[in-house]
Structure formats: structure tokens, C-alpha cells
Length: 115
Image 1: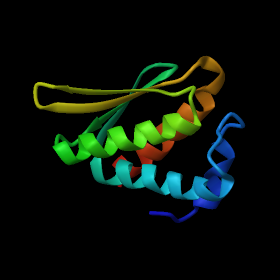
Image 2: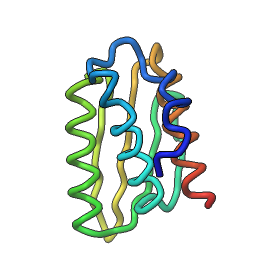
Image 3: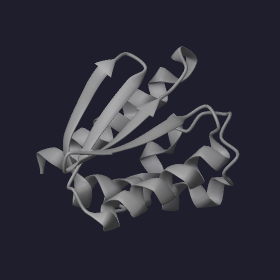
């Protein structure tokens, strides 16, 4: 899960307050969530990404916990966890000036789903 992580840290914005040494671990956590729980990736708006997750209480808790920690260091993110009618989705929204970070998340999630 952590291969090539060091090469991908360039997309971490300067606004991120997570210590540089911890950034590869966070990237690996997102990669694991993408590989193990995401079943579809959609981009309904330029500044919004929707990740459809496999429906389970564990995936909901995992996504919520990771989103809360990520919001603690990159407060420009807005995460919305939607649970309805047996479906589970994590929506990620950013201001236009951080769309490059959303592009990177979409790329990583899409690559994990394609495997």
C-alpha cells in the first residue's frame, strides 16, 4: 500500500500542518481506505469528489475518523459522510484554490478502484 508514497507528497498543500514525517503515513491510510472500501469514484462538481464506499459500520467509522484527522491538518477540506438507504458515501469538497489536491485524491482513489 505504501509503494511510491514519497513520490506523491508534492500534492500536499503548503496549508497542511501535518508534520512532513507523518505525511507518508496519512497517504498510506488514504490508499488503504481507497483500496479496501471504495467501490466507485465520481466528480459531480469541479470542487467536489464523491467516493462510494462498501456499506458497513466499520467503513463508515474508518472514513469518519480519517476525515476528522485530515480536517485537523488541512482545514480547507469539507468532508461529508452520507449514509442512506443501504449506501455509504464520503464526499470531499475543497475551495477552488485547492482543486489540485482534490485531483490527486481522485487519481489515487480511481487507481485503487481500477485494480
